[in-house]
Length: 378
Image: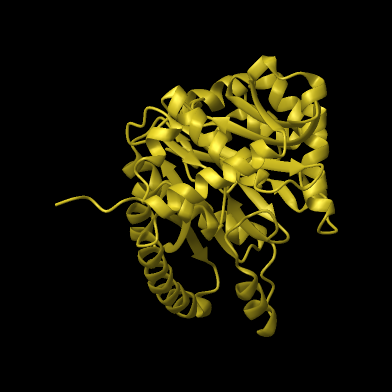
């Protein structure tokens, strides 16, 4: 017998218990990361992210947890469903609120729940619980974003509809240095990357990497100013507060990697990443002044170099951006899962997803042929 409980704050579940089930290697499912979002005011009912985290208990023992939010908009998700909301509205129905299992403002695929049960046993329990919660909260449905690909079939058998997306990731194929990596490019693309890097050096920009507790409060404050400037240039404000980054630095510094760019000894740009034992996740970027090719150097080439030096196997530099292809980032599939409460909409959504999947797959195939690597010799 299993009991399903909902929690209006991640702090209602002990950090030790949450991390026992979820682990601490994947940074975004850690209790420390999710609590930093809430404790900093970046995630709450006022920002449209109402925490409603799910826990599963058996005989009084916690056996499963899942981040869950009641959403009142679709901002900060990176799996776009505005057209779905519009369709609901045109039929006189409310699309919001909706239930969402995702890492707020974080389009990085990975685990979306922690279990001490076998996954095949837990999936039917979770699907049944989520359907019940949809009814209780008058939610239009449940959406699980950037889930692990191997979970898709199990949830599909439970009646959920999968949605294909794509991103661009870098993979470490035993490279010994950045130059060794570039040696696998064709000549034209190799020269283009070298030219970009030379432009940065010619402008007198110096790059430095600081990690973990070596990141000073001043450096973190400077980075946050750069982060907000990226949004201000578009007339917006960044989703995340300065307190969020400060709490990350306090609670899980060992997973922070900060690249800072200096010009004439003045810090002018920065990119903050998180890391696991095998992957670097490029997440946040900003700059004070515009420098030619500095974004590529700070956000991509420094990350690749770091992965090679540290033996990390994958670099996820963030969502979107076909310009990453010519720099060696390969198109990869990403998946989300969807339960639609209104039965009348399910066939239309299924048809939309089928057509979209075909188009996404065609685009991935096309872009794969544009990668800069030399063709293997026969």
